[in-house]
Length: 157
Image 1: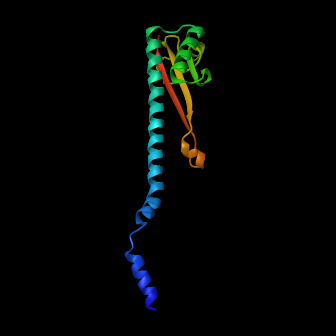
Image 2 (image 1 turned 180 degrees about the vertical axis):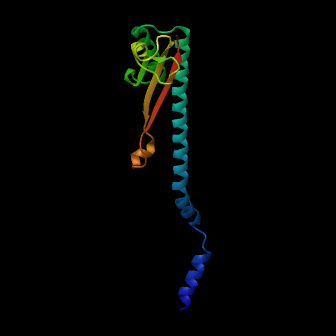
Image 3 (image 1 turned 45 degrees about the vertical axis):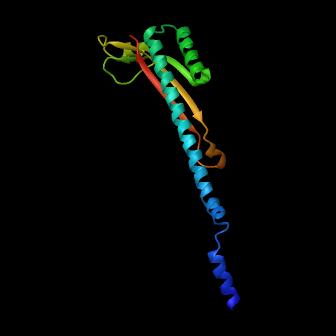
């Protein structure tokens, strides 16, 4: 009986391999935190990039209000190029607001027929961008892709 007790005592005092065991326990947590931090940084960077592109589009619209569909298409292409989005992910549309109403409508005639004749009709340009970001953790079955929807509505007249 003395031999097993002696063996357990010598194993308890032995420190060789302890660092390898501790590293094996802690490494997955540290790797997960590192990847998560990188992904969160990428998500914030993409959101900031889209917001900057919306501000750029607003500056262009204020500098030269697009009156035709072709001019709005040029703005859409500029935004798509600066963000790396496709033209189907960016839209530049003209919308209106009737008098003091808080909602936007797509037709000026709607305002004329549904509000008083004395109501002012304001014209806006709406720039909308949609993008999807696929974080690395979705490849392991955790979470879903993130969808960014950035929209700016700029008063032009």
